[in-house]
Length: 300
Image (cartoon, rainbow, N blue to C red; front, side, top):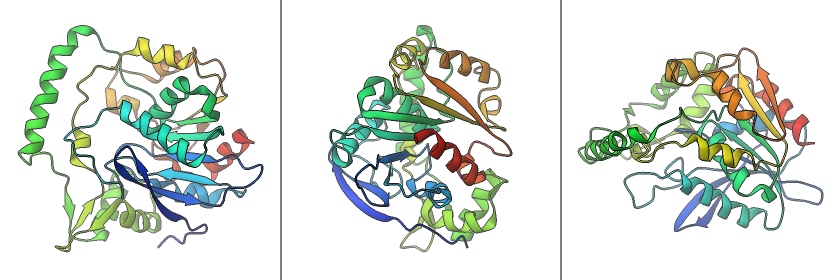
């Protein structure tokens, strides 16, 4: 199994009526800018361990499990609203870096969060790194009735138990699932991740540490015009990192392309695009050494 080089400690922070689980590496100190790393959809903070281990410098790193993921319990609700992630991050920074700008990294869904948060609270971010937080396809108002209907239909499926996440007979089964989803993931890392991505139940099964309600469609449309206005306020340097095998074509089948994402980035005042070869969307698993070097070079 993968051998951790830099152990973390777990902390639980009261944030908006939730006990937020946060993984912390290193210690705060003079001249140290906190490095905050937020994960993506159906992932956990522990997923950044390989990147942290690959870093050449001693950083003070803060990585939360988003609400309803990992060891952060789900709220008393049956669906999730995207603005909550921004507010949770705002409270998290109040706790760990009051009055101090941080370096902020986000992957996938987390990348979308940090891009929006950075435009809303630019004074709180020194450098921003977006790991394939591509955003979503553009929508039109005429889609609203159907979206609301889909949202309500999926809520009914959730309460009927039709959207439950699959449980596995063993941690080995979870590891096999991770390697099937990402063929680049080696056995040692998969075995380690499986025990953080899932947890053993009293019945002896291994359940994914993610609330099934995360699968429900957002009731509100993704409004590109609003997103672009937020992007324009990203006054800090932004590094947008892409993998050689990005998954946009697979996800959207032409409804949203890499070229369209790049067009959106043109409104960001100070943005650099970097590429990682021989990597897929889970670049922090596939090429942690390369990603660590990119991040460290950028935040110096």
